[in-house]
Image (cartoon, rainbow, N blue to C red):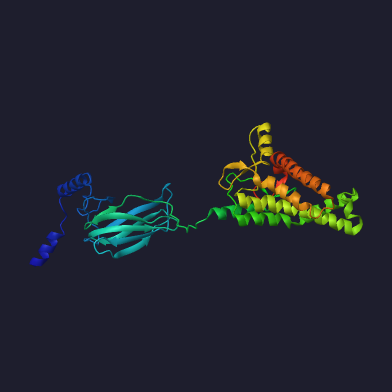
Length: 368
């Protein structure tokens, strides 16, 4: 009976004033301003430059991080550069990584200590970042590393003056007028090297056995036979053969005496050195003077004994195979000497003003 009464009391309706007061209280609470969340005391600030205060790293309370960026000296990013983190105290590699496409690298969970960074990339010089300290819970950002172009080490081969001269005369041996006629005894080099005795004889031999030399000799002999020059040789194949041998003998003796033997004896250079600048008179006088003046192996100008004696010597030798009396022999010697020097002067004028422009091969094809 007692329990029943209590239950009846619980189910009794609440008074109106109590319900109204509860609603007013709830409405007031709903209008209170919301409180802002308080930041966690251990939240880590963003990484800063080398030497920033320690910050706490989540899940790694005793470790720090190291990061940076790699570019070239022009500021272009370098991806795939190898970055090695080295313990500065022990010299052992702690870990390695490579830069990403943005040229950046980052090492996580780095124990406290002193470190250095070594960076290398293909085509660039290696780089070492000086020692720095990493404290617990510290994020270290290293200064940007700018890699320079890799230093290329090549073997140095010593080259002698003789080697340089050999290169130059090799070029000269390819010089041909209109692509046909040999033009080997002319140098277009700005800094010509002196020739050795061996190189002088080599150049003379190359000219003497050139196919064009044999061909022009044949043409000259044919003209002489048609004009019946040196009638003592007669006509027919016998006469032509003797004229051919005499003409070739003149060329052979003049070349070896004037361009090899005497230049070696007097240490003179048998080549014509192209001037290519100055007014016409100056160049013409220079060209003509080279028949009596030449450059010595020492680089100084001197009397051209080689050319003068070469022509006289060739004229003397020619008396051995030209048909002539004793008076004719003297005449031939004098005539051939004068002709040789005169032809040389005309030839140098052609070399200075005309032949350079129609000579191919070697450096002659380059603009003066």
